[in-house]
Length: 187
Ligand code: S6P
Ligand code: ZN
Image (cartoon, rainbow, N blue to C red; front, top):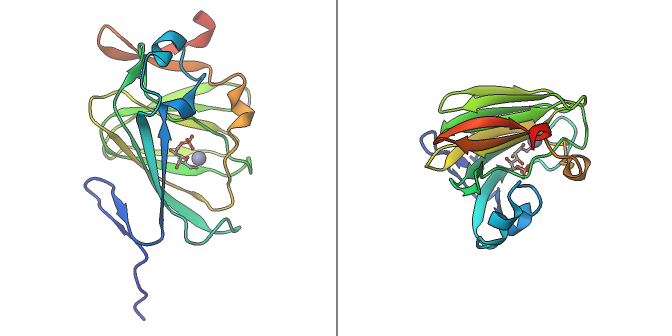
């Protein structure tokens, strides 16, 4: 039996299209307080789009279901800090997730429950497993949009508040034209 396709995915640029694709945008104003350089942040256009997430979430948030998404994070910096996603931990803490690089270059930053961080380079073809109980965010360290695919359990949920107060322990910043990892303890 041939089932109707609900969406299509472009392997070259990651574009998701179809009726059951949800699109969300996050603008600079949605990321207030995340970047180190508050003065630089306030000098920028708050309506500027920082990233978009297209998700095929047709099954709804059911146990055993899966969601598929593509995040497009535009290039840019606030001060010396690269544009990044808000970052979250899954509401159902033990839910993991796969990420893979499609286009552009960036960093995947994770933080476990002991506040230990890892940073991995995302590039076309890189594959990343984010275990459960682990907060995650991506940063665009290049000059072109960073396009990243993701697949996660439909009932995972997103908890932004749990990490908002103290944030991640590291920042991804440009130094002498190249990305480096800066420990926030050194700020
Ligand atoms: C969902 C997955 C991604 C992010 C997206 C935006 O579990 O990790 O689809 O939602 O990259 O990031 P954030 O932190 O704004 O949800
Ligand atoms: Zn996630």
